[in-house]
Length: 414
Image (cartoon, rainbow, N blue to C red; front, top):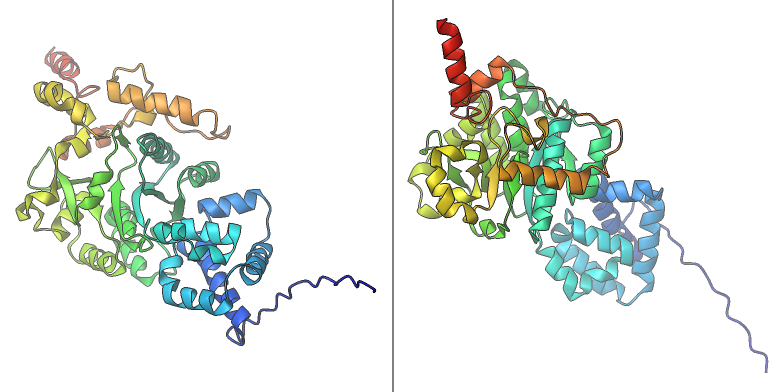
């Protein structure tokens, strides 16, 4: 008896973009294509962590899609079941970095496992913004501080064109997702109205955080913040929860706040900004005007000071810090001089600044690409110092310290 060896046949990957629903296989490919396209191009942008990974490996996008589709078609589950899962849960799977990565790595059948359903609910994120290389350095240290404290949430960084490519790559490798936001985006007609309102530039950039609708809830942290204890419990609070500003406690400080992403909220804030502006020329004034009832809301919306403690003003509440300092979870380096603009042994030394620099030296220095420069020593301008005084954040430990002010007065009286 002749035993004929069965000839192996390759799976034919035939996908018609003009008629994506012509058969069951094509339906799967169509939905998978949407997931990957959203992940790498539209949703998190070309600077996303996953985009960074596949570019470094020099993998063609088409090859990625075909590889995953072959696995999807050949393994484990009936096509009807997979199609129904995709159709019913398409919104859940698109925009979810964890799920998209696993789909691409192991095939689309992985969405049927219990782990994937858990991953589908992991849609909360810490969000920050980097507008320059200096703030990108701050964002990187912030991300590492969150990881050290074992956060279970995603890390997302918005960046502008002011961040160099080297640091974009570093951010992409550190954060779960990053996306590029542009103050004047010709593709968004609403942005063009800002041409006549340059004072709203930073405000506009920051309110982009409401457009991150791939997440169900977020906490925004300024890039000059540092997390020194796990603070994931903040996600139990609702929008808009924040810490009172030390300069005017009836207002909240916009360096740390809980919010719920929404395209409609973003548009409402943008329209409000165009019509009313900001009483302080920045995002804090705008957001306090927009969420004007914050002062009178229930206590749950007023976060404890330990979630946004001003590092540079500790001397103004030294006794309280001595008693409650061990409870502090998030430190905010308010003021014109940021940690990356000074050395760890400068006159601005504090235990928080020392910790910031220890993270920088242990987590970043060896990874930073040579050639990236950021200002470690340039002092703030007179205008920046005046602005800091006006908003209640003078550099108490540096140029605005009592001894320095007294010297200036004595010199002027001579």
